Length: 45
Image (cartoon, rainbow, N blue to C red; front, side):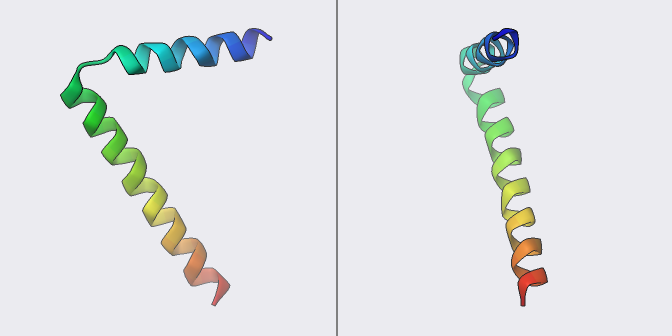
């Protein structure tokens, strides 16, 4: 249960970040997921 508490605290801190910082982080995460998705799709062909 300690792991769940740590994760929830990190999520809460992230949601409290300012607008620009949060948007940049989300943009990087979505870009990384897009790249990984394209790599995975290319391997399955």
